[in-house]
Length: 195
DNA sequence: CGACCGATTGACT
DNA sequence: GTCAATCGGTCGG
Image 1 (cartoon, rainbow, N blue to C red):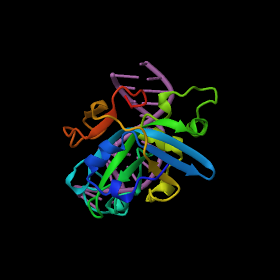
Image 2: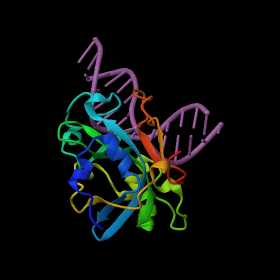
Image 3: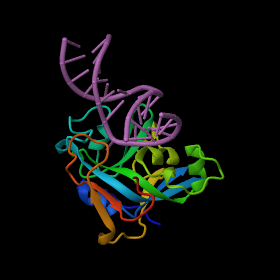
Image 4: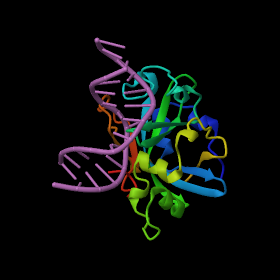
C-alpha cells in the first residue's frame, strides 16, 4: 500500500478532515506494525479558530502546526494525555485535524498491552475510541511531535472509501469556544467512534 | 511568580 | 451522573 502524497494534506483542514475518514493510520515501532482505520476527526482552522491552539499565534509549543501540511502535531494536556493531529494546508496557516478515534486493523495485541488491558480482553472500543486512548495504544508521545507523515515511522495509506451518506457531522467535543461550528466528522454507526 | 484551566480519561456515587 | 488526577501553557500582577 502506498503512502498518501503531500498533496493530500496540502488542502484546507475541513476538506482533509472528511477525506481522512476511512484512511489507515500506520505506526511502526521497530519491526512492530500497528494500524487502524480513522473513524472520527475534528478540524481546527488555525489562527482564525478560537478553539485552536494556533489562534494566539505561533509559539514554541504549537510551532509544528504552522509547518507545511503532512506532519504530526502531538500535544500534552490535562497533565496526563497526548493528542495527535495531522497538520494540513500550506505553511503558516496553522490548520490541523485532530484524530479522535480509530478502528484497530493490525497489532491489536500490542495495543492492548500498551493500554494496560489484560491479554484476555476482547477487542473492546475503549482501546482506541478517544484521542488520548489512541495515542497510548499507538505509543505516540512527545517524541513523535513533528514527525513527517511521508516518513516511515507514522504515515497514512488509503482504505475503504467512506460514502458521503455515511459521514456524520456534529459540534466539536470538549471545547468552550466555537462550539457551534460543526467541524467534527465521524463514520455513522461505527462502534469505535467515541461516545 | 501564582492562579487558572484545558481539543481527557477512568473511577466512583 | 459527578469528580479527581496532574502538569505545562497562558495570562495577570
